[in-house]
Each structure stands twice: as C-alpha cells, then as structure tokens.
Length: 605
Image 1 (cartoon, rainbow, N blue to C red):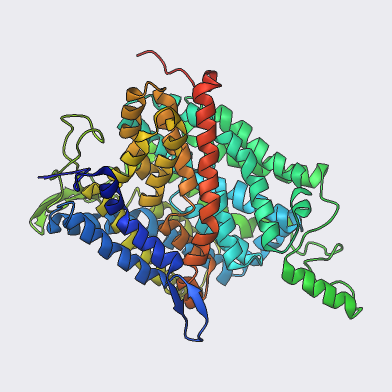
Image 2 (cartoon, rainbow, N blue to C red; image 1 turned 60 degrees about the horizontal axis):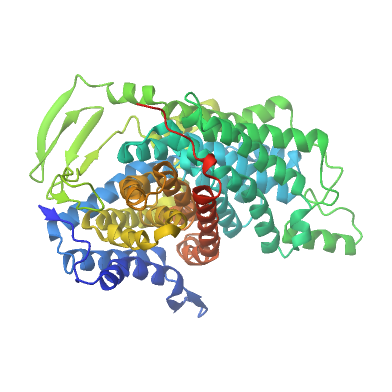
C-alpha cells in the first residue's frame, strides 16, 4: 500500500516546488525552450511529442524518488492514463476528424461553408456562430475536446488560419464546459463532494452566465486584433455579440437550476443561441461595415487597384447563393447526424443499455497477474500494482477513506467516441461514398492523427501519474492557505486541476472533496466553494496540453506545422486563461461576501 505523503521534504514550500517540477518541465519545453528548425529559424518550444516525453520523465523521477511511489505502481498509473485517454479523448477526436474528412472528400463541406458564409459574410460574426454557439452544442453533447476539433476544422475550411482557429475555439470552449458531455462534470462533482447535484448545477448557473456574456466580445476582439484590426472594429458588432452571449446566458441561468434540463444546459443554451443569433442577423441587424480576413482585404485592394471589380466571393455584395435548399440540407446532414448521435450517446439510459447489451457473455481471466473480467460489452481490468494500493490521506480525503480504485473500464460501446464514429459511418452511407472516398478519408484521418495520439497519450499518462502519486494534491493544498480570500483562489484550484488533468470532470473528482473540507474549515458556503471548482476549472481547459493538441490535430494539415504549433498556441492562450480564472474568482468572492443571496439553498434531506 502506497500512502500519499503531501510533505515529503518536511517543508511545505520545498515539497510544493518539488511537486511542480513535472509541470514546469512540460511547460518549459512546450513554450520556452529555444531551438532552431531545419531552415535555421529560431523558435521557442520544441516538438510536442518530445516536450511531453521530458515531462513524463520528470514525473516518474519526482513520483518514485522523493515521493516514494513504487516504480511498478507508477508505470501502472501512467498506463491507465494513456489507455483511458485513448478511449475517452483520442477515440472522440479520431472519429470527429474522420467525419469532417468525409465531408471534405465528398465536397459537401463546400456547401456547408457557403451556407455559413451566407448567414453573414462578416468574419467576426462567423466566429460567434461557429466557435461560440455551435461549439457549445457539441460541448454539451460530447465534450472532451470534440467542440474544439469540430468547430476548429470548420473554421479552417472557411478560410481562417489554423493558428486563429485553434486559439479562438480554445477561448470559446470555456463557459459551456461545466455541463459538457451531458453534465458529466456536475454529476462527478456531486458524487465526490456529497452535495446535491441540481443545487451545484444551479450555483454554476449563477456564475458562468456572466462569462457567457463576456466570451463573445472577448472572441471578436481577439480575432480582430489578430487580423490587424482595431478595438473599434471589434466592438462594431456588439449587438450580435450581446444577442449571442446574452441568449446563451439567459437559457444557461434558467436551465441549470431545473431538475429536467440541468444536465442538458449546454445543448438547450447553444441551440437557443444559434437560433436567436441567426434570426437577429437575418431580420433585425447587420453591421454597416464588413470585416474580412487580412488576405481577403489584400486581395480586394489589389483587385480594386487593377480596376477589375470585386475581389471574389469574400468582399462581394452581390454574390448569389448557388445551392438549393435540398442541397444545403443534404450537405448539413452529417452534422445533424453527429449532434443526434452525441445526444443519444450522452443519455444515461442509453449508456446503461449499451453497457448491458452483451451482459450474458461473461469472462474472467488475468492480465499481467491482475484480474481482467466482466462482460463482452463492459470488460474491466484491475490495474496491476495500483488498484486499491494507493491511499489518499487527510485533508485531501476524509479519515478512513477507501483506497483509490484503479480500473480500466473498456466501455467500448457506450463511449462518446463510439457515438461519433457511428455518426461518421451513417454519414458515409448517407453521402453514398464510394470505395475510393472511404479509403481516402481513412488514410487522411490516420495520417493527421499520428502525432496528436502520441502526445495526448503521454500527457494523460502524466496526469494520472501525478494524481496517484499525490503530487497534484500537494499543489492543490498550496491554495488552501488563503483564508478569507479563499473563494477567489478556489477558482484557481479548479483551474489547476483542469490544467493538470485536461478535464473539468477529472478536476472535480480530484479536488471536489478538498474544496468542501476547506469550506467547512473556513466556515464558507460549501455549495459556492465546491461549484467554483468546476466554474474556475473551465478556464483551465484552454491551456491543458491535450486540448491544445486536439486543436492542432483539427486545424493543422501540415505535420511539421502541427508538431511545432503547441508552444505558440499555449503562449497565446495562457494569459487569457489566467484572466478568465480571475474573473470567476472575483464572481465567487462577491457572491461569498456581497451577494450571498445568489447562492442557491440545497433541498432538505
């Protein structure tokens, strides 16, 4: 039995610095290590697979030596993270990219692209519709990086640069994250903290609507500045940004507190936002000036200088839509199938049905000396040298807590990625793809995902290793010394958890109990503090390595560019992430001491 030690050096500061070494090593090689490429150009940050590898080495060193975790247990924890990452994240992104590639190969994405452009030719408004509203729907149905992959690929197809598409979709994938994958983070938070699920959801719904109103403005201004525009050009579309974020926030506020819809908060809010924004732009308002990409503005200026008329479809004001309603609906069919499948696979009853589908086919054997048993639809492997052999200690866990389970549950039928893959298969049949198109789609997808699979597997293995070694808990405990200011830092604890694990769900599982214990010790409202772990965590989503790698996989076609994109993207979104967590912290601080009536009261048991 490995008992986690949260102060192995006998000094809190030294132990905290020691626990931070793997993260600091990873960050340094991702974003700061200088190197030159084959052409002699200087860059900061090395190739993502190597950066992840050095972080993993540092994690093994810290976990096994100063913290004393047995090497077999450390290897098993890393393997569990990598295996879970494949089924929980890589499988989703692989299937999502497969579907997207199919629409490109069959030329249907061109029609989708034209239909989006015709809602608005203004690039600022396209950012709102795709990255924010459409991305929120995908987050609500499947989560775990899917919205960044899908919306990012769509934006690249529309002509946005890969870097822009990655950054903007990482920024957008914040406010909806607390209810991602049919409310999985909230469900997990309620389970580990012992607090009422609907009350926690309502508390999150009293915090994140402020962010939901802010994010569309944040997105537009960030995009405009990236394209060499001005603040004035960013705020020219404030009516649309207000409708997009405001409609989402209003529905988010009300849906999050209902028994019937709290787990579907993102889906209903995202659909409401898309409909309201599209109708507003179609019938009520449109910007007086049109903002285009820098390349489009340059082309338009060159065409004007040559006196040959309009510069093509981008700046044109008279271009007619070339497709029929039937053609448009047919092109959008794969995306409708995707949303439907994600929604179905997110339903608890459907998950249960799939997990029990082959319950009559049972087996029991051993793998590496550890039990590997279950049913054909739900095999389970007790990880060797790890399952029930790690004990969390107070104050991270309550006295007498059970040892940490370490099971790799192969829910191959009910996994969200399977739903996305089914959507891809059904879409291919609906699009009547021939054998050559199937082959091209498969080949292009596998080639594109080769490097991201390697990086995501390593980073998730690192996250699980720090969790079972207890080094993440040491970092989390550093925030609990804040005293009366703790509501502010509770947001940063959730932010740290998502940064370390790559998941708001995992962060809630990691720190949910600690947040409640700390709230009790400081005599703060438990509902507020525990919910803030999840709402603060959403701001860490944009900087975790696996989310950035998902964005790279979706947005970059060139393997060399993809391998070196992680560092620049990370350096760009880092400050946005810090600022966003500070916003959540300030909201929590105000609700703790100035507006306590904003905290919902849990039902009497």
